[in-house]
Amino acid sequence: MSRIGKGFTLYEINSRPWLFELREKYGAEVIRTIADVPDAEIEKLKEFRVHMVWLQGVWKLGKFGLEMDKTEPGRVGAYGRVLPGFTEDDIIGSPYAVVEYVVNEDIGGDEALQEFRKKLSDRGIKLMLDLVPNHMAVDSEWMKDEEKKEYFVRKPSSGSDFNPHEFMADGTAHGKDPYCGAWPDTAQLNYFNPELRKAMTEVLVKLASSCDGLRVDMAMLILNKCHNQCWGPVLAANGWSTPQDEFWGDAIKAMRQKHPDMILMAEVYWGLDSELIELGFDATYDKALYDTTLSRHLDNLRGYIGSKSEAFLAHSTHFVENHDEPRAVAEFGGKMNANCAAALQFALPGIRLQFHGQWAGISKTLDVHLRRHAEEPRDEKNEKYYKRLNAILDDELFRKGSFKMVGAHDAGEGDRQVWRLTTFKWTLGARKCIAVFNYSDEESGGHIALDDITATDKEYKIQELLGGNEYSRNPEELKSRGLFVWLRPFGMQFFQYT
Image (cartoon, rainbow, N blue to C red):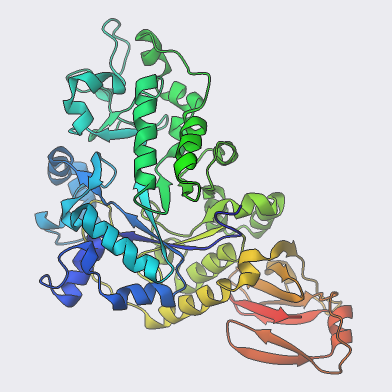
């Protein structure tokens, strides 16, 4: 836990769209590379209490994927739906079809990236980059090297019962997962090949020298059982057998020998998060919490959180949007709903993943293949909300304290629909904070027991952090009946006391 504590705020920025946005704001002659990001923009990240920036899409891309993005009818049609009136110049290519792990010249190359990293570091902010281990671009440097052809999954020379749509003309397989079709701009790496494992371990170690953290794309696909599920018959037909050890266990051990403080965050689904934590990852996506929050079934939501240990939650990454998920404002039904859902998740132990545009309440999709989203005004009120929320959660109480879920009751006052309230408690020494959420569409009230109060004064002070108010209450009543709260739909409050 020493690398991430009880959690921190991680801000995902799409590198090339961000540069496009900054060029529109400051001028292309001012913003040439990522090194030219103005100090004011870095200071804004600090003001929002960002601990680490995930700069997405910094690696070199190829012409094949870009041309496919510009011509494939399905992709072009999708662009028109999210960005009406887009032009060909708006299409920039997928950041997950990597040609080579060198910094894309579109953002200025390695020197510019390291200058940007220094700007962040000078303000106490760390840098996270991407690793895409499952595949490389069709036109990657490894694909051009005959000696590295066996780094990739290959179609067997005999047998015809293999899906022809999963392979290129030269017999190399396209990247895929077990539940969807092949990704035609990618080539699938063969993790049953010891030489490929060695080469990807070297990539991992190399990248760890360029940043403070890595977000690992679809990390569970590299597990032996997942690789077998995708490619077992093909690999067996070519004489490859399942390795005894997991790639991640060996590779992470080798990386940590040189970079012990590197933070590894895995994109993972299908309930495989704990396996990756055991293999050495610091945090994993909690997609199950995202889905449960989106459903807004409060019993299921509280049941899910209550079933997880504090350690599990602290190793999790919580989010209501990112580059793969729809914008929270659009998906959750408005800004109030989305903000309550976000605060409820971020008040848990774990990494608080926030996405470029989320603070401003943006509802328009930013497709990873495009350099901009449809025009939409920024909501300054929403930005103030996130600035305040992040400041509250930046307190050491939420980064070092102990966490538990607590209940609310009606204290015999009749039906106040107290079941709508979800309540957490954080404790650090004498300091405590009750975070209470009405993640529903009707008003709700109830009492929350504060049985750990030791004060005997007639008037006891409680601070509500989000609104900045202070309340005077009788300590004996707080211990016997509890603190009374009344929340509007999708309302929340943070009560601090000692």
